[in-house]
Amino acid sequence: MTHVSGTHDGLVVRGVSKRFGPTQALDHIDLDVRPGEVVALLGENGAGKSTLANIVAGTFASDTGHMTWRGRPYAPGSPGEAIGQGIGLIHQEMRLLPDLSIAENVFVGRLLRRRGRVDTAEMNRRAREQLRRLGLDISPTRLVRTLRVAEQQQVEIAKALTLDARLLILDEPTAALGGDEVDHLFERIEALKSDGVSFIYVSHRLDEIARICDRIVVMRDGQGVASHPTAEVPVARLVEEMVGRSIERIFPDTGTARPREVLRVDGLTAADGSFRDVSFGVREGEVLGIAGIVGAGRTELVRAIAGVDPVASGTVAVEGHRVRLRGPRDAIEAGVVLVPEDRKNQGAVLDMTIGDNVALPNLDRVGHGGWLSPRRVGTVAAEAIDLLKIKGRPVQPVRTLSGGNQQKVVIAKWLQRRPKVVILDEPTRGIDVGARAAIYHVIADLARSGMAVIVVSSDLDEVLGLSHRVLVLSRGSQRGILDGDDATDAAVMRLATA
Image 1 (cartoon, one colour):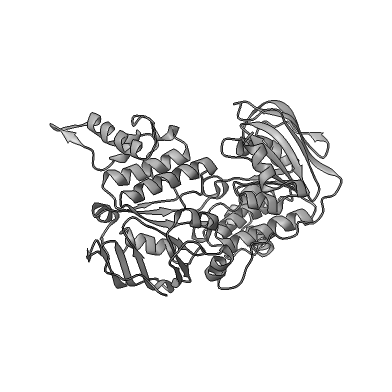
Image 2 (tube, rainbow, N blue to C red):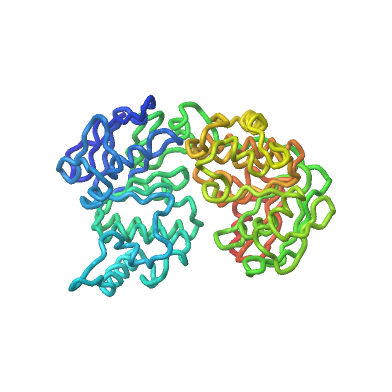
């Protein structure tokens, strides 16, 4: 792989390798990041991106190779040592303390003191200064738990900036953001670039790369396989480099919806006002997409249909029978299941095995008289693994699986109940392009088998590519339902921004 000359004052990585047991995670990687530029780091899950990012950020050391930073040898022994030298990693999963204020989170572990006491006023002043630098006009005394995900991300960046970070590694920074929030983040990145701050940008969203990045480095199986001096590279070429084969982002045929209606929602209104007066039906074999910008009420709507959140008015019926939704159990017993947007915190128990995760909502199938049958758990798990082609064994902890396979486990555990309606909220969030294709095929198979499917996604291409019809929400109100050829990018966005 070609690389930039290593004589600049930014980050220079040469010949870095890392092995974990029998797995060669990195194999002689080169990387250059110049001052004030954004370098995209692309690759499927398992390509080595996170390993390289963690070595640069001081989480662990490499086995071979060397690095320089600002013209000097660089070998951090810890993340604290890395940030002390101006390099910080902003994780996809926030690592803030929810019950502390913004300022306390920014200075946690290094509280400012004056005359032996914590100098709260100075911490608030400095935190406010960095928040304003990021275009965030909120009080530094607010508790982190009251912030939206996008705001929490800005706090993470502000935390690094107070330590005079000159290189920020952003790991999937837009995974939980809507369109307006992504635009705001990119504006902040551009502003910081003009101050000479550099970025390593790790993302699965290839459409973002050309918008914000200056160069692209592509990794596969622990190796650098391509380096592009510009971010203006066709998506099809990047995908081919990432997966090692030609693959178009083509969505599978979901078949033809049948006339029989499975789910009917009438006049549904949330108890908290997040959505109101929503009505629609979903037929056998139909994929109904739900689109809208962040704050439209998409997730709140499907959580209500699944019995998770209370409603103020309206009805939900399955196969003509009204469901009294007092909780998720009522929806599940009626045949409605939800695959939530946050698979790690809401969808799976990461430290439990695949078998145990599949067994949890199916105790009536894997036990008798209050006792679980390990043999039956193993059999049901093996069926789920085979059905969804999960790369793992029944006794393997879910935490050890890739994001795509974790998502398959969450889907598989509900399919064992043979539901009538499957709701998938952000089914491919944080999943690489190869695994996305596998999830798309799972969704298409569900539809072709006659199941009613609802898909919520922030990826408009995903909604349009999978759905027979698209319901569009804007600020909690239903703006319309688009059929087939009428469901275009422009038509959806026109309704979503109404």
